[in-house]
Image (cartoon, rainbow over all chains, first blue to last red; front, side, top):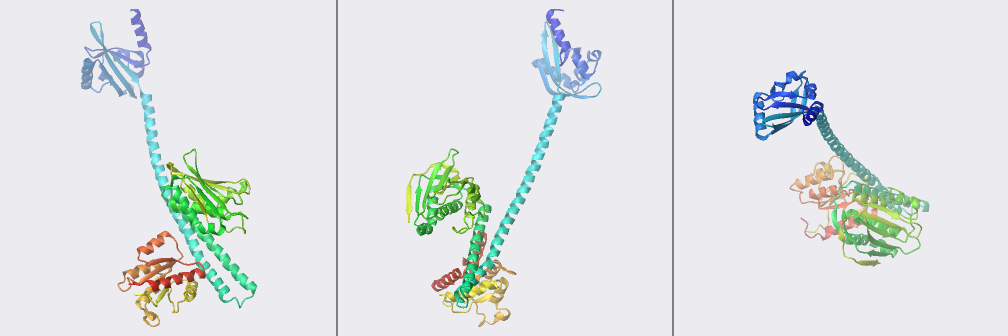
Length: 390
Length: 145
């Protein structure tokens, strides 16, 4: 045996792949390595002299002949995945590669048989897991769909509930307001001053409750209504919102500055207008001993949003109250300033429903700077500064 | 034809509202008697002249209806629908007078053929203003059906 032959022989004996040597003339096995003997369970003697189909490597004699035809033609055949049975009937899967060589003047076929049973099992397990996962995700999707429908249903129920409460409470309220007014206007002579005062108290309380119900309805609507966002030029909306506050501006003699440039934003315009009216209204309302001065300006943010500042020279908001004032029915002033405590809750809810945020900066009692962040579209619009001084 | 001396039928299940409405219209300068029905079913009976409503001197056919929405038996929508389907009353001036500012209610009322949709005023002064506006409108609606 030459050195190279010896090397080959050692490889043949030690390989962890099955190797068969076949004589292309007879198609019979002439040699088999120990690994394949161990793997398939046939003895060396049983292998030698067999054709491939006899040990199940090819389906039958016809397949055998076809495979050898192809091998003669191309010098190479490969089956990525062949099912096999070992001698003791165990099912295994193999990758089968066969090459035709010339050794001097005679041909020789070497077949490599690799056990891929474990890989196949892993693949099957993986496939099964994927299918299971897909099934689970279908179930999950269905569950989410059902829950969403239920949630929508209960949202509608809640809206109907809030609405009917507010609506039904209004009817007796109308009576309280109407009759207490009648009492004051038509029966004042029959009452002493206390009596007239009491009737007025009833009337004022009923008016307050009416305001509360109106705001509660507005809050429930802004939380529940379907809103569609559209591209809107911010400038005109700001101007319209300020115009909505005209009577308060006139009453207080306030100075309102609108400082451009205003970009195009993605908003629900009526909601944004209400938000701005509430913020400007607050800026005009919460001022003591001064003429209100309100400034509205836009500042581009690093995240692509735009921040609208509503700055006032009012009484300010102490840091410990700056979160609380955005909650429903939270009021910091009971007597001095009228209101129901819903205005800023509407601002927060409305801004959030348009994908934005809101907050306030106020360190001392020299004013507040409320801000809302809105999603922008494209570049800022034309720059302009207008001033309202009524 | 101007609705000079309108016969106003108020359809409302609330006695309080009915009483205050009477005061409001009086204060707005309306001299005649307001007619009342307590719900949609009663309003239809009135229009058809059923039972005591057969007496047309006491219960004349209205030229204007002020219709509440939320009422027992037949609500305002159902009564309005009936009126618009009835050949004798399909052009009758029917105004919704409701406390509901819900967009769905407003849209549905107009879809069913309401002539206008008024919100119930919260207090007496507001009610007087509504009544005055209505009376002025009747007086100046020169081409009523």
